[in-house]
Image 1 (tube, rainbow, N blue to C red):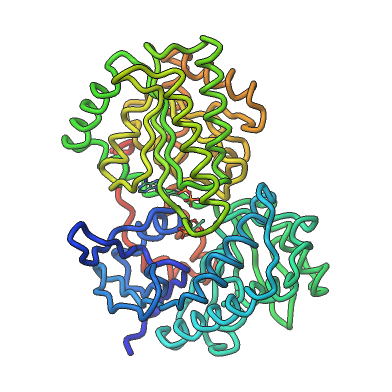
Image 2: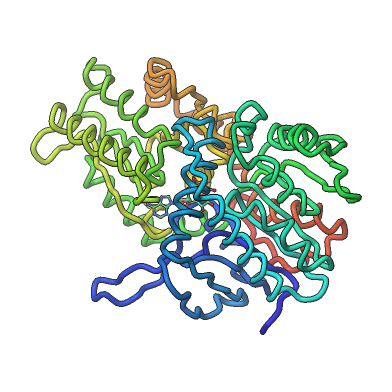
Length: 478
Ligand code: ADP
Ligand code: F6P
């Protein structure tokens, strides 16, 4: 068994198996913030990534990606239902996102969640060198830090929560609340997107397990568990260099022609998820058309909604509602060959996403709650000429950093409509000032800075961060 000094454990591998047109298995980068973020820092790092490759049944052997080894995990059909679709995505996901959909508490799912967490911990224990650092990711694997500590007390264990971590009033609804907090406390460092989440965690550790301490250091079981906020980011240099490619520029010009050369383009790009506020923005856009405040001859919207968690009931229902609404909007306001909204329920490769970002006059990002939202940062990185406007929900973690966006409360549809109009009519000099400020921020706070900050807080020496590839220089710095 090959072992590594750095091991990442995440529910998903950065690749998804995907049936090619001829039925063969084809591997593709998985959509989603976690895969986007970690792929960027790990593809040139000597590390092992433990995760699920999608699908059920025995895990296929996978080749390394550069210096990154992949350790695929298998899931049975029952585990997929109980662990991934059930406890992770029907209980924890809605609860952690302000319960915008009702969390389901099904007693049968806990056993699958515990069992799969144990298997992931065992796999990590196998591939970690003596004294290695193991970095566990996200809400799917909250029990892994403690289980791994029991198996391998020699390891340095980090945990990072990519999604929001709720206040006690919500978290206390969970039937297995104490075990989940105990699981996370097995780590040496528990990282969150926001300070508030670290505060919520410290309060819960005190309330449920009698742990003492402050928001940044919790005393538990004779150990100190450090906590803190580490807002995740994107590979700014990668998005900038993609956006500068001739293929992407041509593609963007072609898209513009296809969409209507003198129309303003509104763009949204999301996983098809009920936390993303897709329905709220469709309502706002449709009402602007209805009221004649925007006209079909001047405006077009593109909604990319990549399929996600398609077997979970709430997601199927959402897709039906969105597709119904898109059909209604086009039926009422479109003309032959001139739809009001283009809806694309497909994955895109990075270059095509960069072209879409370059085509958009206004990027509309309206989650009802989001740990970070990397799409908002990708849009800013793709706007090398400092044009374009970002309309961003106050409830995305990114809003704390991108304060020069047009911030909006997506629940307030009238406010959302006004904000869209303000962004559409903004003075180009104001847009350029805002975009330059946001680009400067993400350039300084890119994915490499995030990984360095986290790993340095984990080992206190900077030794781990030395594994990471040298930061590529952003174009803004050249
Ligand atoms: P989440 O983690 O909830 O999915 P984020 O906005 O943080 O939300 O991250 C989404 C990631 O998935 C981004 O890196 C984005 O580029 C990628 N993505 C979104 N839509 C697509 C798509 N249609 N095809 C490929 N990647 C996508
Ligand atoms: O951070 C949120 C998250 O659950 C990530 O763990 C994941 O990358 C993304 O959303 C996509 O979700 P899924 O892996 O369920 O398709």
